[in-house]
Image (cartoon, rainbow, N blue to C red):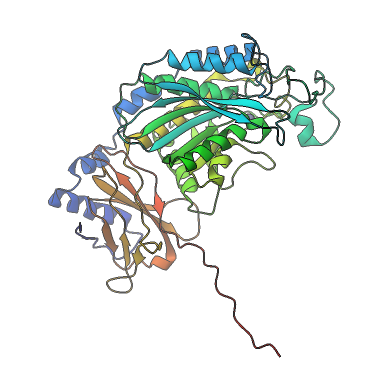
Length: 476
Ligand SMILES: [Zn+2]
């Protein structure tokens, strides 16, 4: 199906206001995307998403964290037979809790039998706990944390400082490789916080009554502290079964606002994403900044252009490594002396801060799940569909229609710098010309927008890396 091309009568990329006015005129005259244009001018937020975000409960987050702490340890290799202590009791409680929220949630164990390898010191059955909220389409958006814990002598604080262990640290007996790892490891922030956020959002989304386009998955991973094992197993399954995972929000250590150095920051959250620049994961991080910031303006999203903190890891990387789009949320000021330590207790949590991080996740996941999928901008030959036609000096952008899209938003910025500088809303077309905009000077991207204004994350026009060919020389 061929779509009409929208030609913008603007001569310079700086003329954003003028371009917007022309586009809105085009939309109104042509009848394309009338609803979107009206909403754009009113600057509306979706009242359904506003209501969903406001349903996040500090009280419930606190109750979940206290219950997780009661299991004393949730070590991946701890008891599976006790009904009150260890990973077996914890996973059963998480399953039952999420099941209780709504009949719309399909809650199950995601189970694997794993042989001894790496930090898994014996054969063990691993169970992620997942709640699926089916959408109209099979494409999936994940909100996740890891419910397993670890505590080592000295914790992360001494690991970071590479000095003597903190004298205040209660000593933890070294693990016997032949015994279950049952030592005290409360893990209320690492990663009770991400787990509580995930469980609470399962409730909020399951009870929202909103009919989402995407299928939402609320995933509590296991085995993270043994090397992202639970996340890796699920990502492997997704590849093997061709499960269309569109985005993963991973939350790990998101509940503390007081740095170990005394600096307090309860008003920002870091979002890490792997490169290269304009990878889908980077676009997802920009999306969280854009939409999390709109629905939760009191909380600042700080995108970080790196996979994670130095020397640290998280479950989003297990998804990235298998080609999925995923980002990691991390609190802005960490207290390393509590991490991987018996002192990672409820006292180290700020519920108002954790709730703000939950709201940013909720707003971003809801917007994404209501929006169409991001458009594809690659040709059959795997090249970005961007040219200088028709004049040879224009920006001519093409994309494939996204199912459910009523309009598209074009973004661009100088080819130096991280943040989009210009955007225009166009109608239900798959081609646009920006006259006299030199494609070599800007990064371009396009997002799909539905009739109510829900926007996908951006797909950028990026040329795949070229390896070149070795030049042959004469051997003498
Ligand atoms: Zn963690």
